[in-house]
Length: 65
Image 1 (cartoon, rainbow, N blue to C red):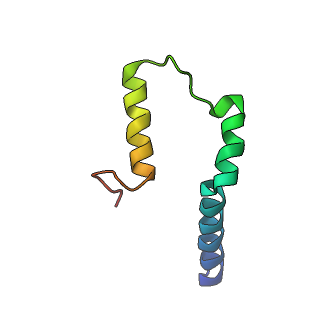
Image 2: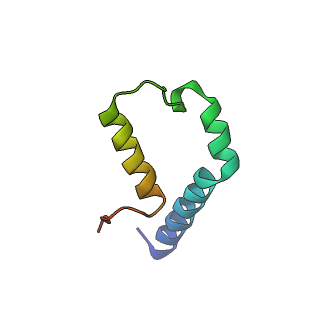
Image 3: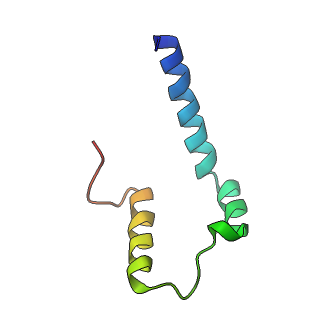
């Protein structure tokens, strides 16, 4: 891949991350049935979801290298 294509790919990835993280996108996705969480999910699954939320917020104790 040439440097120019690599830079375009990086810019695209950054833009996609920005749009997925936008509050309006988050609100919209929460209205879709596939993205809603059930209130009565098992404790273990709830714990994993909480860890995922923490990782998204930058609170995770580990980082992917």
